[in-house]
Image 1: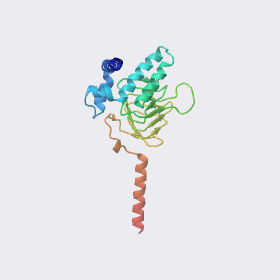
Image 2: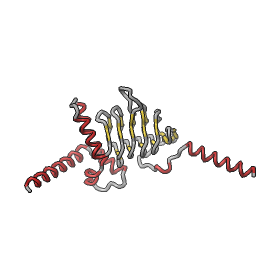
Image 3: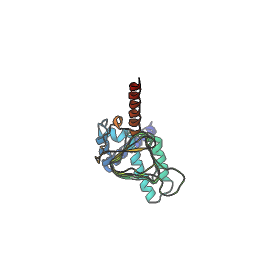
Length: 228
């Protein structure tokens, strides 16, 4: 019984240390959760239950250990975080402040990825490479970019600031600032220079290919009606 009590006290102590570390060292990430997730209600809920936040904390620790050239442990921590959160962030990636990973299951951030400030990633996002090349082979994501559910950003390309990548888009080319990208492969829809907000409406993002097909169908229908 005493051994069980001791184990319980150790677990409680570890949880308390974890809470303190997050509250003291990750306020910007916590604030990002409250700004971008309407389901977030209390600090204790966010600190204990948000897998995206946990993955970022583990990444920061692993990245620091990698910088001071500790072998093996950084990759072990990244895989441990993957096991518990479903989010894989390579410790070699460079990530700015206020990253928000919503839900997060299936998110992958590759080794040479560079992620700016105030970036939002939804579940299933991949920042990946395109082959077996060495060196810089993963994307650069600039500030205030939002990447929708299931989107794949592949290769050493740059997504410029304040752009939005639509759900399930596959992007293999650079994207200019203040743009929306949808489709496979990704196609750019300019947003008239207006900054894209982080509170997104995934339903009403326009797909130019779909629009063209609808216009073609409408034209065919009018011609058929006229000929009859």
